[in-house]
Length: 368
Ligand SMILES: [Zn+2]
Ligand SMILES: [Zn+2]
Image (cartoon, rainbow, N blue to C red):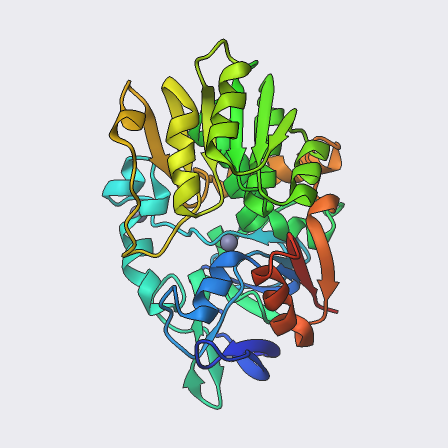
């Protein structure tokens, strides 16, 4: 069992501590991944702040890439030295929801999630003999991570680790919202609300799907500028009247064909349904507190609008991660612009403080 330096969350709303943990065992069907890059996502921040309940102590980190260094028995899909991006949605493949092609709702995935251990429900991390939890079946803020083989998706060796890490959550979710959930048509009018990592990825998903118009909505001028550099054709602040008027001006008064919400505040959920055209598609990616209410003007929900809430952009990681990596290598998906900082593990708490302040799109922890 290798030992690994890891950022450990022992108590919510306190800094993570850098500790040495034991990683393993590598059971049949597992792989041991040496993590080389892991980026900081808002879901980790929710766990740190206690908004997302996670059993503690835990190693967070669910947007990570690394190298396969050990194969469990029966693993034939991967080889030592493969470069992999981690997926946080392992699924059984044969339950009611897996049969409906909705792996994100897999019974085993949902049932074992709150335990925050490995997908089989048993721990793969320990500290001084006591089991430790891992967020979203991963625990990427550590030098090593044991995952089921289906959570380790091979990407080309040419894919840099730091940019590969981004594919595992934020980029997949944003691009997937446009391509897999919204089923956006060539030439369509799209609006993306919120230009953090997920929203900026949604902008790129809309661009790659051939949207004719992409309106980026964000109160931060620097984020709007970045969205335009990544493919948005228009940008406006979060003001609802202004954003709705812009969408209608560009569509003969109809409204946007597709609206992707990636901000996670009440005003953005309201804007999404006001700005979409009759019969259009809304995709909600953001989230607010689970017990919070969100008010809508009833009329804004009428006229055959479709609303889908998605956690992972309809991800099919085994298919999508290699395609996303290739899109980056071909220059069709821009990831360099989304990395605000590369930091050592010791700077992880400051990295999350910067994310909370809205100063960074993505900080990436780089492991040696
Ligand atoms: Zn299942
Ligand atoms: Zn995430």
